[in-house]
Length: 597
Image (cartoon, rainbow, N blue to C red; front, side, top):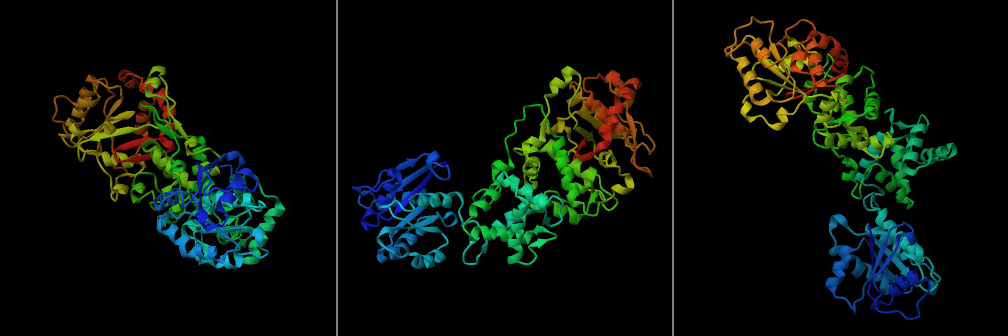
C-alpha cells in the first residue's frame, strides 16, 4: 500500500511547511520556495518503514476548501506544521486546524496527527512545554517533532514518525486519559497470552516466552534478557511474575509500558503476528486462508492438525479424565469470540457417564466439522492459533484435500480416512436409535437425546442428502409399512448409482411382521444384488454391537467392489480387518450423517 501524508496549514501561514517537504526530497534547504510543492511519491527503499509514501502539500492560493476536505479524507496521516517562534501559529493548531480535521473525518476512523514544530534553528528554547497539554487534550495526536528545514535537523525523523503513526497507531491501543490500554487491545492480548500458554497454567515460563519471542520477532531472548524483563515487571507490579514466569497481569503491564514509552510498534508486531488488523479484529485473510477444493474431493485433518488438537485437549483436560467438563470446554473456547459448540454436540459424539465430551468425541467433532464445513474448521483453528503454535504458514497446512472419488474407483483403492454414510428410513423406523448406538449408547441411554431425522418425503431429497460414500436404508421389522419407504428411496435415487447400499432390519428384538410390499426385504436385496438385510437392535443391556458399522465402513472403503462380492463371507473376512480400525477410532454423527474416522 501507499501512505498519503497531508501537510497543513497553507503556505500563507509562513511556518515553513513547503520548505520542510523540499528539504526532505532534495536534502538541502531550497533557495526559492513555491506556494505549494508538487505531489511527491517516495519509493519504499528510501523510507524508514519500507513503504511507498505519497506527500501532499496544501495551498490556499491554489486549492479550494472542498479540495482540502477531500485531501483530509484521503490522508493516512496529517502533519500540522507550526513555527516554534510564532505563538499565533501554535494557537491556530487548536483553534482552527484540529477542529477542522475532526469535523471532516469519521469519528470511528480518525486520522492520526503529527505536530511539527519547524524553524527550531531560530530559537534556543523548546515549544514542548506549550505543546504537551495539546497532546494530552487530543488523543488523535500521535507525537510532536521539532525540526528545522534550514539545517535539516530531524527532517528524516519527522517522516519516520509520520509513517510510524500509520503503521503503528497509538489510538486503537491506548487511552491517554485513563493511562491504560483500551478494552479491545486488552482482549486481543489476553487471547494471545492464552494461546501462548501451552500448558494452561496461567504463566508464561521461559520456554513459552522464548517460543513467543521467536514467533513474533524471529529471535529468542538471551537468559539474562529474560531475567531483565521479569525484573522490570517485579519492580513495578505485584503478581506480575509467579514461579519465575510471566502472568497475564505481567504480560499486559509490559505492553502498557511499551506503548507509554513510544514503542507501540512492539505491541503491533505481536498483534499482527497473531492475526489482528488495524481495528484489533482478527483479519479475514488470517481466519480464512486460501484452500482450493476441486469437485468430488473431500477435506480431512492431517496428522499435524490432529497432534495440535490433541495438545489443545490435553492443555484443558486439567483433571486428566480424558473428557472435557463444561468448565474445561468453556476454558478451551475462551479464545473464540463465541461458543462454537452448543449442547447438541453432546448428543452427536461420544461422551462419558456424566455426558461430557470424551477425547474420542472431541476429535470426532473436529473431523466432522472439517468434512462438512472446512471454512468453519479453518476459522476455529485460527482462533486456537494453529499456524502460530504449529509454526505453519496458515491453517490450510493442517488440511488434506483428498483426490477425486472417480480416481479412487479407477484405482480400486482410496486414500480417504473419513467416510460419509447417509441413513434413510421412514418416521419411527429406528434411525435415531441406530445413530445413537453408533456412539455406544443402548436404548436406555438414548431417552434424553434430541436428534433430527431426514424428512421422510423422498421427493424432496437434496443433493446434500444424496452425496455420500455409503447408503444405509433402515426399516422397522415390527411395522408392516416401514420397508416400502426404503424400497422407493433405493429405486428412485440409488438403483443406478455407484454408491454401495445396505438394508438394515431395525428393532430386531421385536417380533417380525410381514412387510406390505411386492416382495420380501430379502428377495428385494437379492434382486438388486445387495447384501441381505442386516438385523439390528439397540435394545440391549450392554453396548450395542459395532459389527454393522464396520461393514458399512468396509463398503465405503471399497466402493469398486460389486454388490455380489459384498455377499461373499470371504470378502468380509478379508476386508473388515482394516475397516474395524477405522470404525472404532472415532465416531461423530450430524443429523442423518454417520461418519467414522
